[in-house]
Amino acid sequence: MTSRNATATARTSTEARAVARTQTLIKGTNGIGTVRKTTLPGGLRIVTETLPSVRSATFGIWAHVGSRDETPSLNGATHYLEHLLFKGTGRRSALDISAAIDAVGGEMNAFTAKEYTCYYARVLDTDLPLAIDVVCDMLTGSLILEEDVNVERGAILEEIAMTEDDPGDCVHDLFAHTMFGDNALGRPVLGTVDTVNALSADRIRRFYKKHYDPTHLVVAAAGNIDHNKVVRQVRAAFEKAGALGGPDAVPVAPRDGRRTIRTAGRVELLGRKTEQAHVVLGMPGLARTDDRRWALGVLNTALGGGMSSRLFQEVREKRGLAYSVYSYTSGFADCGLFGVYAGCRPSQVHDVLKICRDELDHVAEHGLSDDEIARAMGQLQGSTVLGLEDTGALMNRIGKSELCWGEQMSVDAMLARIAQVTPDEVRAVARDVLGRRPSLSVIGPLKDKQASRLHEAVA
Image 1 (cartoon, rainbow, N blue to C red):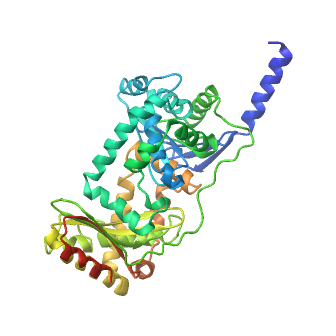
Image 2: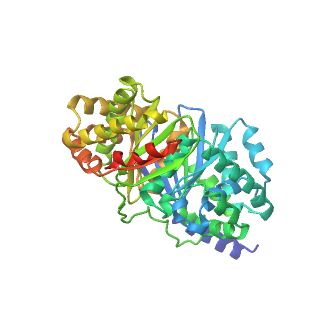
């Protein structure tokens, strides 16, 4: 290379690196808990949280794609692709990928949701460069060979069968369909036997190329790490794969929009020869960007979030009608769900549903007591902190926050926000959410006479 070319190359490299933007989003104490973000040319975002007191690190890559991005004929493609990225790249076979992480005692996995997908590895801090290289290679260099598609199809069909054999899990998919119908949010993340069987390698490759460019990705790492080193290693891995993208590319913004769930009073029953009836009674909740979500979190905790909650006390402790009973919320970009789950003997299903409906109606009309709200706030604050005690949870928090909200909130700020919730706010959100007419999903061996009475719970 001539000196002129060398100079030009160096200038180009320097200019490219100059547009990488680094910010400190959360300033920790003595570096502990500091969250930094770098946006590379090409739109790839890298966020890290430093925790020098541990000896582990978790590295993950979040993709801005989930099952709600699929057409009906592509249902299950996002999850199928999650499997295929472990099947081999131009540099590593499937065995090489798993053996590399196993050899250092690490853990590697992935998960697909309705609005995002995440691939991650948890290793000793000294093995972080290996984890970065392996996970980045998977995301940028997957081959998606037809033979691998055919082999993995069998594994995915077995996963679908396994889920269908677990009615306590399957009932939540049924409830999503009850609430959202046949649109993308109402379809199962895994897909169905028919859609999975119909997916071809070519269609999955096109889906991969569309949704896995740098503008759709967020890299997240947490633990005993150095932000600048992580950025250099990630950049080198993407450059090696030729996957950094164009210098003017802009990261995909968090999802937004408006969606109105118009279901009310719907009942779906799936007959199964099970020992228990599994039920979810619920209604539309709040979008994850709705500021009332903090009050809804307190309400959910008090109503069905622990052993002292109303539903647990009324259904299990006082009457012994169910072993498992709880409430939960699911927030999406533009809508949400609130649900109450219970598993009980089929002969008790109507009693359980009546108690749950009576409690929802009572709280909607009269609200919770100040003591219940105070206890729920304390429980929510404690569980928030305890749930962030490992590097995997920290990686999940900062990665999801960047992808879904485009901003970060410190743990102290989260605790302060929960503490700001007032009893009046909890009562107001109870009226708004619980005051709506519910819908119902049931899986179990209910007889015709029992099934015909299910509509009483949503009347």
